[in-house]
Image 1 (cartoon, rainbow, N blue to C red):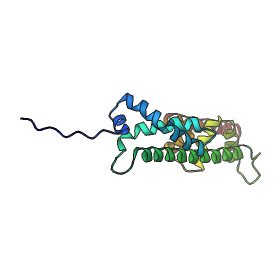
Image 2 (image 1 turned 180 degrees about the horizontal axis):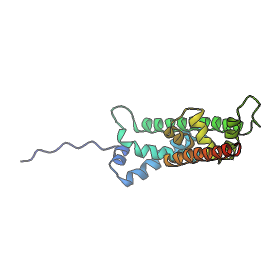
Image 3 (image 1 turned 30 degrees about the vertical axis):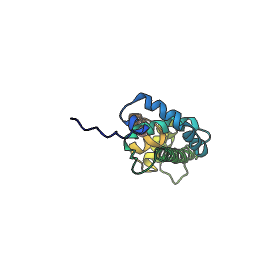
Image 4 (image 1 turned 30 degrees about the horizontal axis):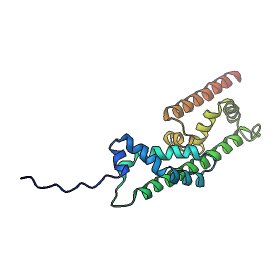
Length: 184
């Protein structure tokens, strides 16, 4: 005789999402869209729609981290949403500072007499780079950021950041080589 089995506890929506259940994904959207929308709109009213998409992606990516013994699903989703919008705000602030610094560097005018001829030439070459190349180089050189950090701040793929850095440096090097040849 087989003993009756105890009923298994029902899995939460996030546990179902972590298991790959597509219906659970739709249920998560229906259940938490108002909560996520309100958090995104409160923190980032201009880009709330983009923030909501990023939040849902994070919820899906990290659904396996949900532990019903530690918190409720609603708390977990709210914390993921809060962290994502705070990260977005920080990236935006850093990007704004970087753009300001790039604009300042690009529009400082001709270098003064205390700046060497080589530095003046590099500054002129820097102005001829694309905006993306300048942003990447300013973050790397002036801010001391790694390429991975730059990719996160500028919301660019890492390969694109590497390409902009390399092409920008090669363009400056080529222009410097041409400048050296003209003076001799």
